[in-house]
Length: 195
Image (cartoon, rainbow, N blue to C red; front, side, top):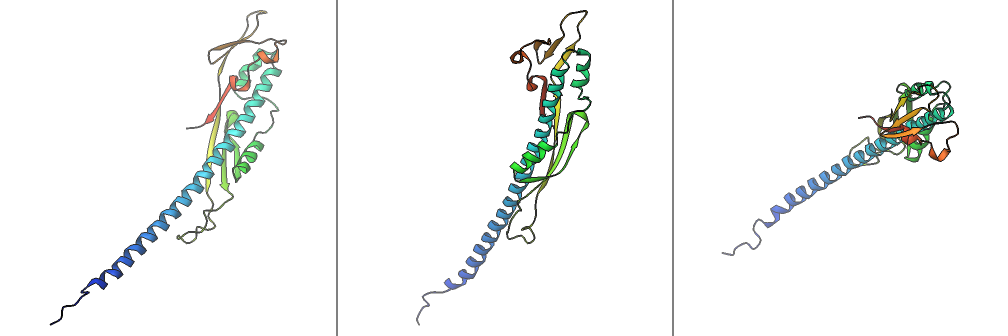
């Protein structure tokens, strides 16, 4: 009697095709998850940049207000608390930075006088993937930036010059102090994202 040469060798082929197909499906699914995570990360980056930009613009305005009030040290405490009458809006900077990060600002709201919360949505979508319905999905994220005064105001006694101590550095401010010897906005206020 003749023995069969090939036996059951053909039965493994369908199992091989099934396993390879399953692995390809998983690879495409992980790729879709990666696309969504990258899009969400882009949105968070844009929100962080936009919130920081608004806060930094406000910091510049507060520093300008302090330099304009150099003759009135009694107003400094209010400036360091963020209360400056007539200070202009700062959210316009958040729109600029969001656009530079390929996103659109949905809202920019002051959190009191020394903070901003910005919500953005990405202009780009997650894109086509194996997961249906993701091709038009955009990511939304929000961020809050705060401004923290770095200085302590020591009001003068009599005709003495006011003393401003900022993060351990002492500044004697007077109306005729040369501009290069005046503290910079980053010396006066720290800007960072809220925890």
